[in-house]
Length: 484
Image 1 (spheres, one colour):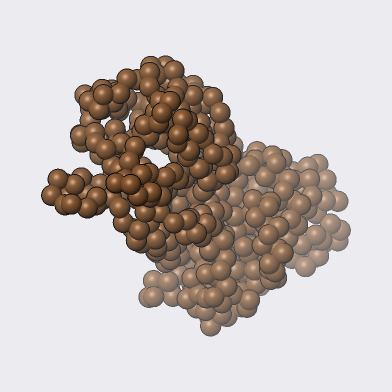
Image 2 (image 1 turned 180 degrees about the vertical axis):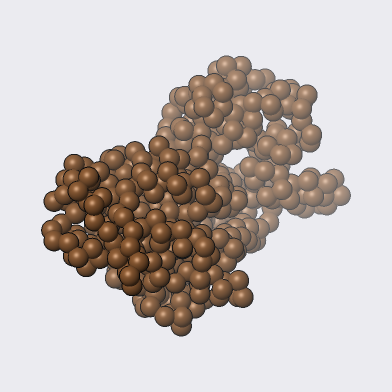
């Protein structure tokens, strides 16, 4: 048996039957058992052994409620269903976590959970609240327990861990999750703070100090699990832990995007400018994409050629072969117009973050294809001033991060961004303040200002807690970040 803690009654008709690392609880009702979480596939035998120790039969389990789809909480559900015959409930949003690619076998729950569901068995009812953040489909569970003639409200936060909200986790290729999950987590905390809980249970034993309480049960006349203050304290710690991650990442993972390359020093959007940007300390490259008459994405900012090439006409008027004859000029230095593919072929392998702005309609599909083909989908944000372009690229490639370029954003803009699944706010730097960055972070958005015109504004953006900035002089930003 793999269990590393003894099964026991917590209070009323609630029992612990899991292991120290992977909690599992059962509610004994007049018509059988409701199980909350299934542990991992490696803890099924421990759970079955704990049921036997407590005098329960596997066939007593009628319902299995899964708080979320991570393997350590849902991985054992398939085998437990086979052994017990129970019906399994999980949020539809978390199906991707119980897929064959994640678990090594295919599992489909019997029922999907919906916000506010009341799952009843015999004399016990469990209220299920949709509380996303830890995963897209996390649910928390609440029910009443009667202990020594008193009724207490018990609650389990279905997914309170915040490490899964670090960018390193959110950007994982196998589990890409929107930055907006951070905002969802904060909203979940707001909602759960409205719930009164007398007995907090955890889906890991350390969340509610279970080991310590278990020991006290044998020496204290009072049930140590009854603590009406614990729930709010725990939610406060979870909120503080996520803010710590966000603020630390703004310092340690700040992205210094060379705007069109080092465009103060070299012809903009040329290979020469991008090489210079890297040499000057940039850890990100920002560029613009338009399409030629023959549909090839090229790196060029203006609709027309005149400002930087001296040529007449628009980019879309020329096939690629003709555009390649022109040169981009700055202070007597010249270079050619590169294609997006040429750019990615040279820089994709480097430890860089990419910001690719769509300047025209119709390039979404080929740009997404190149991003995936060159493997930069986990370190790239696609931006545009046109929200419809971002909607289209998300329809083509839902996993890609997107950013809306605006001079400033209103509350209505923020709502529209959330609805469109946009990850990043890109506003003019002059409109950035510490208070607004905190507000935007609280909603889950990454913050990357642009139009940084001088060193003072540059410093203000960094000190406001932004996640990055687009800048023409990456060397000065790199120096400030280093000294700071």
